[in-house]
Amino acid sequence: MNRKNYKTPLTLEQLENGTDIALDFEKLRKVAQCPDPVVPVVVQDAHTKEVLILAYANEAALAHTLQSGLATFWSTSRNELWIKGKTSGDELSIKEVRINCEQNSLLYLVSMKGKGSCHVKDAAGQTRFGCYYRRVKNGVLEFVQA
Image (cartoon, rainbow, N blue to C red; front, side, top):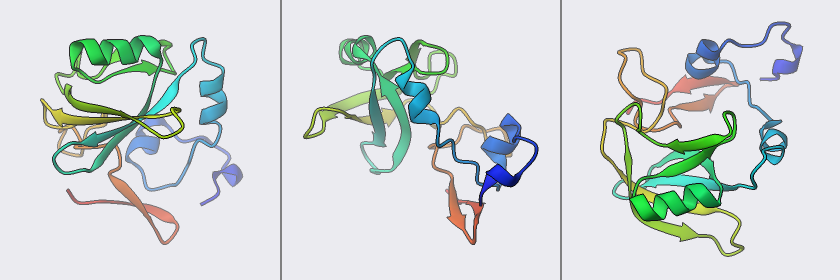
């Protein structure tokens, strides 16, 4: 389970579709270095209650979400507004926006306008329903059947 002992880093394909655990424990440090302050956003299917995505929003992303009715985030890797589904067509329509008790995170309750919400495709080339499509079992990742 500890990737520090591995000599070669995982490729993007291995990271997104493999069974090795390679958690990015440095992600929050990277997020903290973004030019705009952000809060985490949990995205949940309003009907099934399945958690689909964990992303980040700055003030502009939240304002766009509330104005447009589409889930919008701040891409911490590209440092730009990310309107989910703008290029893929897999938009997430906002049903409700909630703020937690300490006002340091958001919950977007959404309905999908496409086939899924994850940018990663399955073996058949279809959009995955959500980003949490693997579980830890016996120290490795196992794909969860939808």
